[in-house]
Every structure is written in C-alpha cells, then in structure tokens.
Length: 537
Image 1 (tube, rainbow, N blue to C red):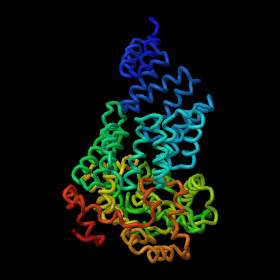
Image 2: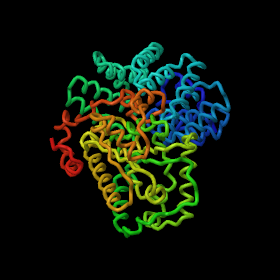
Image 3: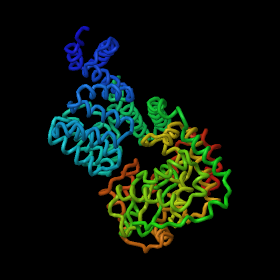
Image 4: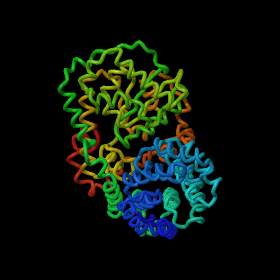
C-alpha cells in the first residue's frame, strides 16, 4: 500500500486549503489508509463547513490513533461545543490539558464551553489563562469583550474588542462585541459595513453568520429601518434552521411533545393529581420556588430580583429536574405513572433533584431555592407531585412581544427554541405551551402567582413586595439593587445585559413597530392576548 500523502496534506493545511486537503484525505481513507492526519484534515474541513457530527467522528478516529495529541482532543471539544454538548466539551479540553497544561487553545475552548453553560467565572478565568499563555490569540480578548457585553459594561467591551481587532482585524467575535457595544451607546455609523465584511467571508461558520445577520438587524432596528431589520432577523434564523434541521426536525419536535403531553394529561383522572405524596426525606433548603412561564417573559429578571434577597439563592437555568422530567414527560414511565407515584419512588426523584441542586449551587442550606427555568411550565405535574409545597411564580408578558423577542434574539438552540426560528411556528408553539399550562393549572393543586413583566416595569417595588408576601418572606431593600448585584453573577441567557441595566420599559410593546411583519401570528396569538388581558392593538 502506498504511503498516505501526509506531506502534501500538511502543505495544504498550512496554506489554509482545507477543501483540497480534505478531498485528498478522504480519497486516502477510502483507499484504506488510516494515518491520524487524514482524519484530522477531513475533520477540520467538515467542522469549518458546519458538519459537526461527521467532523467529531473524524477527530475521534484520529485520537484513537494518536491519543497523546492535545490538539485532537481540543478539536473534539470544538465539535462538541457546536453540538451543544458542553459538559463533554469541557471534559475533552481537560484531556488535552492533562497532556499539555500550557496548551492555550484548550484553555480558550474550555472557556467557550463554560460560557455556554453559564459559568462565566470559569469562562473568564480560562480566557485570561489562554491570553497569558499566548498573547497572540486574538480570540481571548474577543471572548472577554463578549463577556463584558453580557454584563452591560460597554466601555470595557469596546476596549477589549479593539485590542482583539488590532491583532486580527477580521475577528468575528470581536467585531460582534464592538457592534453590540456601539449599538448600546446609540452609535450605528459604519456598523452595517463592518458586518457586511464579516458576511462576505464564504467560509464563515453558520453560527457566526447567523450572529452577524442578527446584529445587522439590530443596527437597522436602531436606525428605524424596520423592513430591513426584519429581513435580517429572518435570514439569521433561516441560517440556524439549516444548521439544526438534521438534529431537531427528525424525531419528536418541541411542538409535538407539548401536544402529546396535553393529550396524555387529559386522559388521566383529575382526582389522582389531588393526592399529596408524603416524604421521608428532609429538603436541604428552607423554601422552594419555581420561576417559569415561557422564554423572554421576564424569568431572568425575576430570578435576579429574588437572588438579591439575602434569604434566597437562584439557580440560573440549570436542568436539575431532568431525572423525573425525563422519565415522566419523555421516557418509558409517562404521566400516568406520575399521577399514581408512591412515596419511595417519589423520594428517589426528590433525592436526585436535590443532589443536582447542591452540585449546581452548594450554598443552599438555610436558603430558599429559586429554580428558574422558563419551560418548566411543561413540567408542572412533576413539580406538583414531587414538591407539593413549592411556590410557583408564573411570568407573563404580551404574547406578541414574547414571540417577536424569541424571533429576534438568538437563543441557545434546543428542540423547543428551534420552534422559535420561524415566526408562525414559534407562535403556534407558544400557544400550545400556554394551552398545556392552562390545562395543568385547572387541575393541579398549585400555589401559583402570575407576575406580568409590564407591571414590574411600571410599578416595581409594590409588585416585588407582593411577590415577597406570596413567598412568605419580608421585603428587603437590597432587591432594589438587583441590577448592580446581577453584574457579579453568571447569567446564561440573552437577557443578561438587559437585567444589568435595571428596570426599564424598553421592551414593552416592541411588537407594534413590526405589526405588519407579525400579521400572520395575530390569529394564532389572539386567544392568549385576550385571555391575559392585553389590548388588541
């Protein structure tokens, strides 16, 4: 058998001709060669073109043949980040760093995975370590700039972005941070051209293309060019749909899941939900609150307001209910088994829940735990059965603002948020979730308080005092300073910078500026607009 064309492929990689290198590598693999460089070369091309599953397989083949190569473990991590398998990505980075602790790219990618998980403290530490080890890495100050935008620290974001762009003028992340900070400051001159330069790159990764298009929409929105802004948002979402369709369009969609649960719940005897399931275990927390509703309804704001109370600790979108939710909502057991669950079985799931809570937030003893996850509204039967004394804070916002905000803000894509990448599908999904929650609320014995985002914006202190009264705690003046305190906490949602600004009414009624573009959603959302008492126009 002929030797694999390693030297030629290396030369092609050094010339950044990944396409030719991948073709040559693929031909050699098909001919029976198995040199790790062949899988590495093809994997890099597949990763650059958004083929993350097949790229991951290539890098795994390469690692099997060269396990001591830290760069290959790091390439696996980058694929896992793109596939939103973030804990696995951190583990892959750790394997790379166990081989070579000073391997700067692995520190950088570990930071990226940590950022995606909402651990912004770890993310910042990793980026700073990457910067220390290799000051030439433009991505480190770029990512630090992106973290600054999440805190709403626009001056620091802009300075870090400029540092990164001085090293690498075309750095996408630095450009995005610079544009975001500039928009926040009210200046849009030259921003569209910056973003068009990014978009002119034919090899731009699809996620970065979506971000550039989304920011272009924000530039146009600030300039009141509504039709162009909407087109840019729609193009960004279409880009993401193309990327994630193979993953989420197959199997049960988020909408199909909600409709299945609604049908299953309707077939269960309502009386079976009224029986409390006692517990032999003592919860480590002194109180328990679930903040839920839907994406972009103000759950992050509520979570941070409550976290400012000295008696409370907020879990920022941690899937700690996953064991019971997985088995009873998606797994083999189903809602019927949940309705008749026994004490020992319930205690097992409670123990798993509190174990995950303690891992996510060790300092829960003697505190009221606030479990904030918007789509836990789908899991209300699980909450009702396992935690019958828990308080529920249900966040509401004008349905039209909710759906449009989900459409224009880049959410982390999962099977539920995937539905929001199309306006009509997103509106249908929202309506289905609200219908499911309404059916739950009509049957389950819940201690629930509705909190409207618009009311918080217009009448903050009285509304928060009412929430405190509902939760059985006293009002604390520290809750007025929630925005300042939120800047020191990791917030893993697009709302972080908005929360850091404090209470404002900027998001109220934004849908009206786009009423023409949203016309197809009007009949889908009309029932919920009326039911929640929002004006028709």
